Length: 331
Length: 237
Ligand SMILES: Nc1ncnc2c1ncn2[C@@H]1O[C@H](COP(=O)(O)OP(=O)(O)O)[C@@H](O)[C@H]1O
Ligand SMILES: [Mg+2]
Image 1: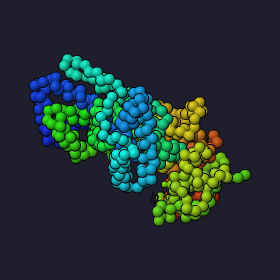
Image 2: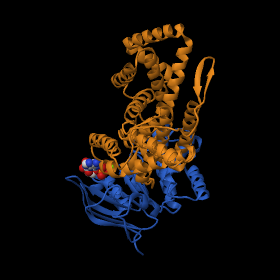
Image 3: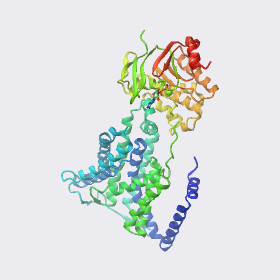
Image 4: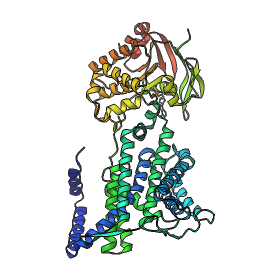
């Protein structure tokens, strides 16, 4: 396998018109940058804040896809449940920040496991399209069910008071906030922990073995069902953390809150190469920055339009994304 | 003495395809038994049914007098039956060491696992040199060694080997068969499935010849080696 830079060169040589468009965009950005470097860096910083939240969602998409080849479209809604859980814990029940986060992880992990057991496991050997449609169904179910009066009431919420005081600093004219640092720190910690689990623990190695070949994993004595369930639990738990952090940064809570971040994180995971954990991180950071640049220099509606065009371009020209393997070789 | 493994009147289907049509055989402890037969005869299907990947529609499988037909695949491994599948099925992205660790998944005593790994290295010194390499980067012969080593990591009583010589150069085939005999000498019973009937019969105690899902012939391996039918159909002489 060739290294990334030479693969990028080959890709653009083959798709030279994309290279030209990309170059024009870079030129245009350079122009904007010269007008006001400060503004540019502010957008980048805001984009990173958003991207680190996306990463927490994208990891779940990518892990679940890696192991059961399913785009879990309900994942964004699990994220939303994490937001509500954190909100109710910190405001109504006055829990502290960390206990609330732990609760969000627990609730979301449990929800993820229930979804897997009830909706996806019976379809594991069915055509993937059946599972995909079911995932969309589960997503709608969560969005509308949680909107019922007896579930999350009220369900249009402004998150006040936040469980921590927002402080902002200016460093050379660029504004940073403690929320942003918190998001980066927590996401980084989650990534390190996840890396440790996947590469250093028995469960993680079994996850990689199951992702590669379920039948042979069974022959090793691996309890494949349990490994798949654990993957859903971990991915959903990360979404719970993401849900909490997201509403700290964007404190409006509603039951459709997970839809857009869910889609964006999905795009980030595809862009990075679905199934790849580093891809999910890089993809998320890039998508976050692209969004903030588009919003800052163009307009809010353009922000979504551009991100969705990224999805279309990736699917057209490189469906395996940045780090995705082309049809993998099985011995 | 009761048999180690007893397979009785096994019928297995793939949808409407009746792949095993009443297979029966047995193995005693310490034996090397080989199943030979043409492509599509049902050899792999038989192994997959023993290891719990497939369920029979009829018949049973007794391992040390315990019926396996309702036992889950992971549980069968912990009972002491390990299946090294056709085509090696290495976990390509996992390192050689991790592949071996997966073989020991059903065990928990770290010290015993390390001891097993040392034994595997004694049989397959080449694996030790490649420990941190991804399994997918090994050559075909090395992958076969890894597949067998991985199987041995579970410390099996009965090892099911599906075409270990497939696609290997003659010199490697001999090495693999030598190691199979060695593993057997250390007390592991072996059920060997092979296309290379001559080699298989030369190391086996007894053999069964499968034809389209049934047992066509059976007997001591040495006898089958001289059997004119077997010679004509499977030994290419
Ligand atoms: N997954 C499958 N689906 C349908 N038919 C199968 C499948 N696997 C094997 N068969 C059929 O079952 C029969 C036995 O196959 P198999 O056990 O693989 O034979 P062998 O290992 O002796 O070459 C063959 O006719 C084969 O075509
Ligand atoms: Mg076969």
